[in-house]
Image (cartoon, rainbow, N blue to C red; front, side, top):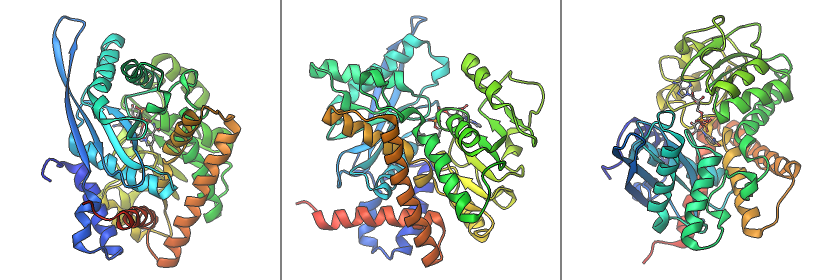
Length: 420
Ligand code: NAD
């Protein structure tokens, strides 16, 4: 199993070990539950604009196919490796099971730096990646979606490449597509909208008035920006901090979100928005606030900063933002910090991706109001399950959430048995 290495995979493995101990899962069953069914590595040669031929590494990891096809995002990022992809696939499995979706988890991506690619180069990377993956994916096998560094356009190229191979339009091969190609209304906003909905539920649970509550959001891409807008516009919160990989701004009196939105729409990044209210990105997470939303990357809440977080609600928009050591520290502060664990908090994305796949298969499309209403129903159900179980068993929300996910997959594997 040594191909799965690196800090992100170690984190997923450690978390699983904690849950397996908590559920008393026999050692004999653990490797079968943890290790991915398949890991595919491909070389992606691309003719670059300057005449060179560059070969990128691409990956797809399918964790388990016990309950249905695998489902998961596609990440384009410079340092991507198979260990990180495998960890993200494993988290997707727990997440899908927790939400009751008929999927196993998958994840994939290409080690590349999207901002450094021209549009033509990005299209070539996207199309060749999907071309190499065609033998291993399909609407009933593995369905891709966007993640960090990819977007609706990349999904459109994936869908077109697969469809050209099949000879007809196969919209159900990817989710997170443009609506014009069979995407669903509400998918682009789904993850951030889900984050904001769950923050609202957490506020109700701890008796924190949402209107006027202060929120800090790390990451201003799809998840971070929609979380910030929705917290501000639908819940009346004041956004006091935002950051991306280029800049971080913090103002205890509140940041001008509309002006920030216009700046990012024009320039793509936060850098250059203002010379005022800048803050060291490392310090931003530790600023006093009611709601803290890490929505960028893994392992940003660590044993070092967890004891110093000054938020009431930690809403994990990103995948894997909190290390297991930090979890221990947060566990000591359970009454002070209400954690909405990633596999619940950002599950709005895969839930609405599931709705998109269902609509594509049926060729029957729903209104945005229907999508949002169903999304809230699924998220609300999972929120209640987790909070009830955590309270009854005196465990953290993460332990409760992961335990529910792992138990469902374990039950499926036991019922199906071990072939042959
Ligand atoms: P994105 O590419 O749209 O945005 C990522 C953002 O993070 C960008 O603003 C980038 O500048 C910022 N960022 C990168 N490094 C940073 C740093 N060091 N400090 C501060 N900001 C930094 O990606 P996304 O789709 O918004 O995904 C963000 C996270 O949410 C990832 O962990 C992803 O796996 C997770 N997620 C995404 C979805 C989805 O539907 N897009 C669903 C579930 C989970």
